[in-house]
Length: 277
Image 1: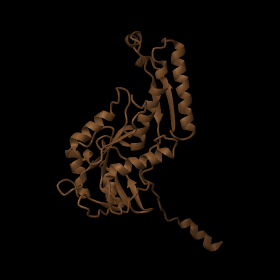
Image 2: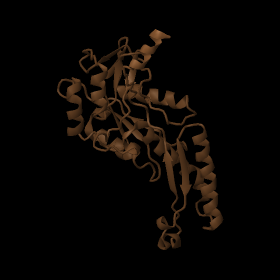
Image 3: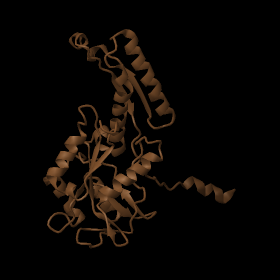
Image 4: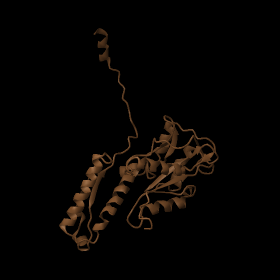
């Protein structure tokens, strides 16, 4: 209300390693002013008492309930020179940078984009060296980390904290979840001006037609694969209409990240014919 801006990402570096703080952060971003939603980014502590090795991070995540909706979980500390950062600090900065390169539309994952770092360490300062298989193991447990494999140090991971318990794409993929927040928030901001207008057929058609145009524009620029808005009779019972409540159904498909790219190799003996040409 003070700045007339909707928070996009919430972080509390250092403090988000405390389960009570992380739980409140997720709850706050699940209900902003009773209307809006967005993401919190938290860290798993990497000290010897908690999760100083990558194999200990998934168990710590589950035992301490870092499995909430609208929550992104990080493990490891990026180091640049003598400075050591919480990964949530670098990740939200990277996410903002990626969003800015896409017209502030959060449809692209921060994974496989460069962090500002030259080492990954735990809380004791001991180097962490992960192979792509080990980083993939963390990703498969809903944890974002850093990987130095091809192209320097990069963020690695597309999964929300609720994964793998929840595999619904709209809940499990970071960019898809963020697009659902973004579209839902934008719909509210766009049509707030229509609240308290007379409930007529013209009002319904105005909302449906104008936001379908918006979704078509997003699809044309490939920020989404497709989308539409419908006003369905079964979702608008007479009791709600009498009480002045309208419900619009938005169908939308943001593109998932291509988290795996496979090549299938086959020996084809037909090419021996080239020996006789």
